[in-house]
Image (cartoon, rainbow, N blue to C red; front, top):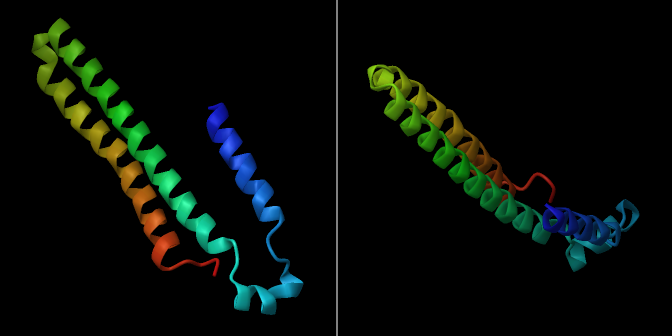
Amino acid sequence: MRIVLGILTFMAALTGSAPSAQAAGEAVSQGSWVGPFTVVAAGIGMALAAGLCGLGQGRAIAAALEGMARQPGAATRIQTAMIIGLALIESLAIYTLVIAIILLFANPFK
């Protein structure tokens, strides 16, 4: 967690040195920091979302299998709840992918 906070602090410090709104004409001709930061943000966001969703799915499956082993009669109900839960967890990664694609290809900050 400290690494993530360190990266976010570093990125915030770098954005403070970005060109101001008064120098917008110069920023367009020389380029700005916004483009590279959106690529980094999209990559870090997707990596975190994919990794944490994978961990969440693994824990959900492990808990469902443990529940099925303890109560075999309730296996169908547990399996149904597990599949719905996995779909909701996977939707979080898909939402992050959509945001990353928006940042990369239809960058609203440029």
